Image (tube, rainbow, N blue to C red; front, side, top):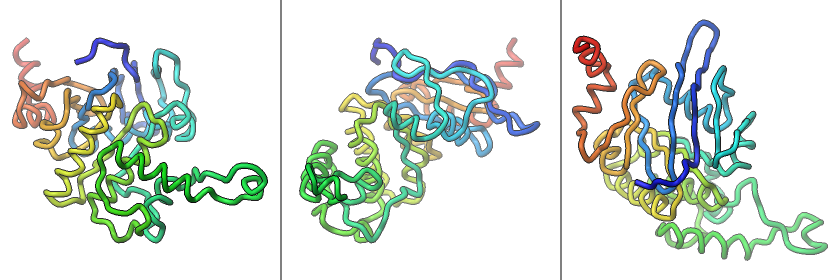
Length: 258
């Protein structure tokens, strides 16, 4: 585990929706190059927390720091400007566009000079950069000229991750990236997450796949009823221990032991 300063720090994060309190004083730190699992039962607050960290939701209380500086995010664009990229289960890919076009979706490169001012796209530059980025992240999909619709589910997820990494991100948030994938495709996405981490980019991984979480993550945070109740070492704590914290059984044992 690195002893460097955290990339992202959250302190006292709460989120209210009327009388419903989705988050109750969440504290967390994410360090460079680590994969942190975020697990919890349905309704524990995982999606709300990802929403806060990605700029989709403003916290009701609490503070965020990114690379040691206060981070006031009012939209996902603010998060992206800091270097926080989010990959969702639905991927948000355009299936009829080529792979390279999906990597630059919404951030197309224009030609230099007059042609660029007239809106002409620099197709060659984007294709070359797309191929370089896929090679950097060790993603094997064949040609970047092929349509995204021709890719497998695991390959599409890989493109979504590559897009996040390619924009100079400093933190990747992944919300259930393997939920709709088969076993082999889950394994490929797992390899991709490890490759991303090896480049020094930290990953916050939300997943119900506890065996994969244990395999991929350096730490596992357990969210229960809006609070982080455990920070587990997956080398020490197995899936059964994670489930005890997720269900609240471990909390009850702690309470009775006092």
